[in-house]
Length: 259
Image (cartoon, rainbow, N blue to C red; front, side, top):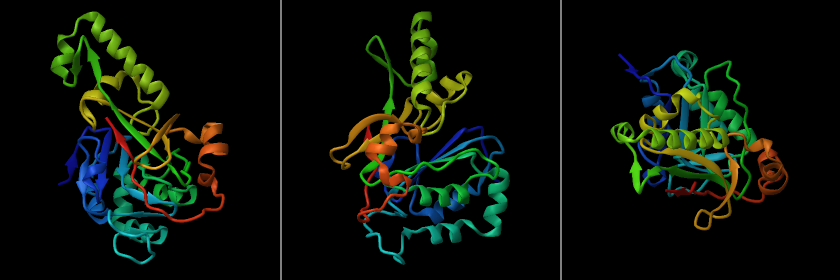
C-alpha cells in the first residue's frame, strides 16, 4: 500500500530543518527522500519542492564541504545513480512529479537538467533555467490579513464578509499571476484557496523570487523564480553563470527564508 493523496505539492527539506518554510517533510538526505517519494501514489500533475544546500554542480547536506566523493555530497553522477535504478524509474514513470522546483543556491543549468531528468515524469514540459553564483531562491510566506487579523484557516475565511473574501481572492490571483506558487508556474484560479490553505506551507502563499548576494544580506530582485530565464536582467546581469559561463569557485550557500 502506498500513500494516496490529493496533494498538488509535496515539499521536502533535505538535511537542514532551518530551510523549512512550513509543513515541509524533513529528511536527512536524498536517500531518505527517495524512500518517501516512492510511497506516494498520485497519478495527477503534482509539483515536487526540494529545499537543500547547493552550489554550482552539486548538492550537499549541512556541514559538509563540497568535495567530490564525500558522503552527503551529491554530484550529477551520484544523482543519476541514486535515482536511476529500475524500481524508482517505474515509480517515476507512473507517479512522479510533473515539475521539480529545486530551491537551492547557485545550481547551474547543466546540473539542474540532471535533477529534472532523474525525478520528473517523462513527457513533461519543464525546462532547466539554472542559477549563477551569488543567486538563490528568495522565499516568502505571504499571509492575508483582513482588519488586523491573519487569515490562515478555512474557518476564518468562512467568517469573512463578501468584501473580505473578494479582496483575499483578488490578492491571491495577483500573486499567482506574477509569481506562481512555491517556485512553480501559476495554478488554476479555481484552486487558489486550496493551495493557500491546504498545500505547504499551509495557511499562506509561498512566493519565490530570485535573490542575490549572501544569505545573510540577501537582496530580493523581484524576479519570479519559476520563469526567471525569461527576464533579461537574470540572464545578462545577475546570474550569468546560470547559462554556463565560467565559474569562479564552488561555494555552498543557504537559500534564505523571509516570513
